[in-house]
Image (cartoon, rainbow, N blue to C red):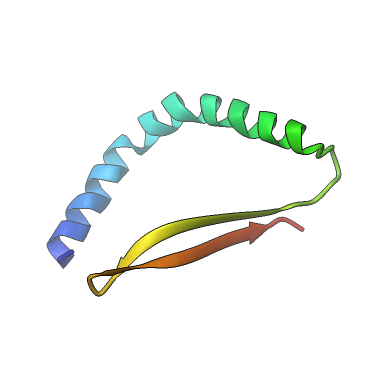
Length: 71
């Protein structure tokens, strides 16, 4: 992706971000809360949220691991 393409994508996402959040966050919160409930998590408990996704690095796909933990 060229610098110009990245800038175009950044601007485009910036324009739709407010509407995206308004349209998608309620549904995502319902799904997330259901997942937490099914996992048996309760208020005050902690968990590690880990996701796996494919990224392209110099033309070849390779896995990228992203995680976040709340303390």
